Image (cartoon, rainbow, N blue to C red; front, top):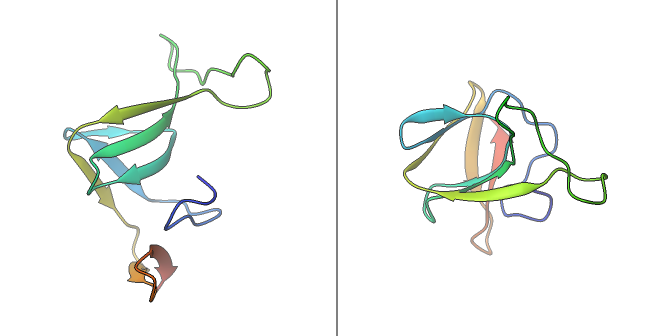
Length: 88
């Protein structure tokens, strides 16, 4: 999500796994905190909107998180300790 350490606008091809199962519609994934923030899905797998109808409703899920980066991307660390995704 915008403002999170490591936020990259328009990054595609990153694969996120929670407890060994690939998940979609992930806005934030943190391997150290074992947390993902994911769009809330209905029984048919469709994104749910918040009551205002303007934004996607989010849920936090915890477990074993693994992030696979696409070829050509690496994680870098800034002097302040924040990590971010960058093209190699």
